[in-house]
Length: 127
Image (tube, rainbow, N blue to C red):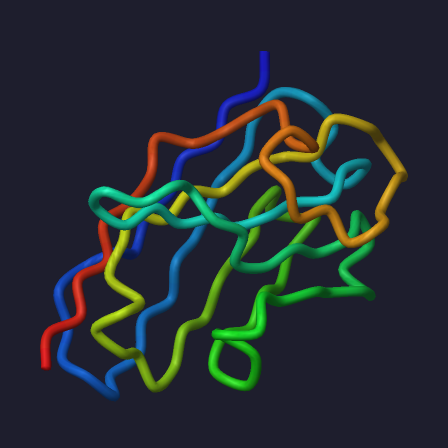
């Protein structure tokens, strides 16, 4: 049984930074790509960023490129999302997720490609 627990959310001002963390337990963490998604009120959950199992390849949705950075620490079974220059439109619940298949990474952006999710952490950016 895999468990993912997010932390690091909060309420900030436009232009501020936050670092989200996701701690994993259970299935061998270093074998699987990880992703971050977000869901704003009244909207569907959307892809934010992903990283392959080794940490060498990343992918971002266009709206966060240059502002967000995804990284992982396989020794600590964790994945992080550093968010800089935050905007009100970044306000959402942020979820980390683990990809279904080990050692497979083709820029997974769809929810269906992930089978384990955390409970989410709220990020609120005010202007």
